[in-house]
Length: 101
Figure (spheres, rainbow, N blue to C red):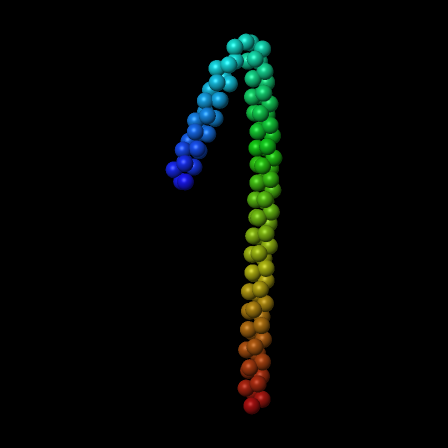
């Protein structure tokens, strides 16, 4: 079964490669070449537009990530400050308790 599936896939790949070659070999007139070029240029433009959109999304995501990292650092600093203040308060309370005892 695995060998049959492998052979079938190889036949499909070979068939697709031959079809592509045949399509290019079948362009015989200037009009056909012009149509093929129009199609290819349209695909190129579409790809460039999609690439530009993806690049923009990436830049926005990177900016958002940077903002989140900045916020995280600020929160960590704030937490460290609170922890230090609480530790100081605990020390003061312990000293007061020792003085009372």
